[in-house]
View 1 (cartoon, rainbow, N blue to C red):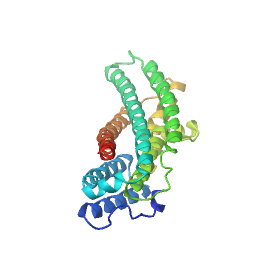
View 2 (view 1 turned 90 degrees about the vertical axis):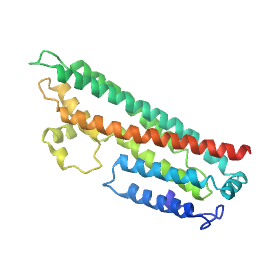
View 3 (view 1 turned 60 degrees about the vertical axis):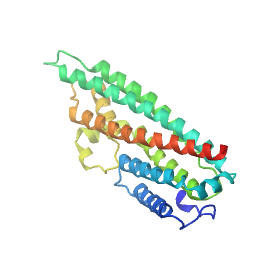
View 4 (view 1 turned 45 degrees about the vertical axis):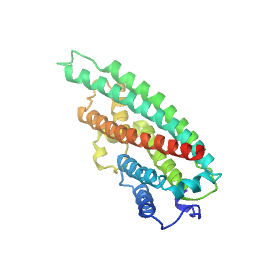
Length: 259
């Protein structure tokens, strides 16, 4: 949607270097979002960098004046509140997933000659994932209501791109909607090494643990768990920084309107 916005004359197009920098950052993010090889972490990083430009952009007195005189800013503020709620829910989901992964790894590290069983930890992880998927699917529905303004300008372009990137992240956490057993078979054949960069690590671990639940003697690859834990950690760290930028941008807009 953002790619189809037509820039209005609400803001100066070339009066300050930060305007050019902001446009370049938007273009870079659009390219990243369109590239199938770009990871969720890379997209979130690009979005975080975009908001750094937005922060500087909103410090310019002329832009603050323009913002204070527009009506669409209320829609942007409403959308930003929805985005913050969705981001907060997503961070909770990531934290729960990381905790369940660590529980399984902890037992695997302590297990000696099969003395410790990870069945309960695996079951708890899959239960958490089932709940998490429902929450993320709800977020995907809620986020559709964010980008509904007909006004097109720098800030609405930024919000539209924010929606697109967060949608990508939510979809990545939800994982594949393919038949779990067909994907499990691929994992069993080590075909995950040949899948694209966009393949969710959540899918790989989910499938492996589902196989374990059905075949108690199946092995659980510690490296898969470690890879997912590392990825969740990376996403959450970038997401935390992005969350702070979203809060700051919203706060700045509210301050501009109140002055």
